[in-house]
Length: 368
Image (tube, rainbow, N blue to C red; front, side):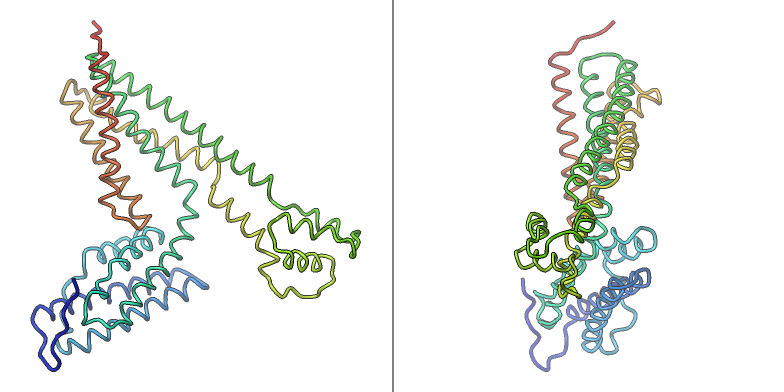
């Protein structure tokens, strides 16, 4: 709902003043955040973050001009901005930028006539700028983080489902505990082996398609008039013009590269693909540790001697909290709602446990 404009010359209402003061507090918090992040960066990232801080300062001045003497003793920024500032002092920039992206996407300026159209446009552009900055950090995390999240969730859900299913059969708590420990060890080793093979195989496939230095070694002996290099670069996906340009460069027929992207594009893309895939050992160890950590949680009540329904309910509660946390982390890093992602993870985990419990009851046996 769009906020109606104030009549010309009319004094601002108390509701407007409260809203403006909140906007100003948030703008100051965001400007400080971007300035703080800029100090940790270098090169183009520092320049970009300083530009964002300066834009937020322009927005500050707009609200300060409207508020006049009321711009002092401001309220605390919104909880989202407070969380951003707190995380900026503790965690890496990928968490902060992901949160900042979400904050920029939720700007109310487009619906508030007291904000200028330029300010609303700024906020829309800021979201795309922060999205671009966060993309770099997300890609660096992609391999190990994917393995860690999948490992933790698999450990939580699969071992919870295992012990709930065993409990549903009516076996004793000692059997449930033994099953849980066996599930932890076998699952962690299986996850680690699977991740290692998966990542290693993917990197080997990329290596098999990566350009070699054969063009450099063969270039001195190639016939300029029957230039086989053009075919090489055409096969790599270049246009005819780009392939001919690159071939002449390799043969020394041109002394400058008028379009540097033609020279480096394929190598840069190969390097970026390898970074996104990640390291095989990192993925394997992350999967093992995270699966084991997740699988440990549902068996904790049984490890500490609890039995029966109480142990099962406590296991469900502990796993529920853990699933909410892992889902929230994924939500933060993806710029989505942490609550919705957490509830999604919770629903999947509890649903799997409920199904296995029902199957355990259906096919259950009592072991004396």
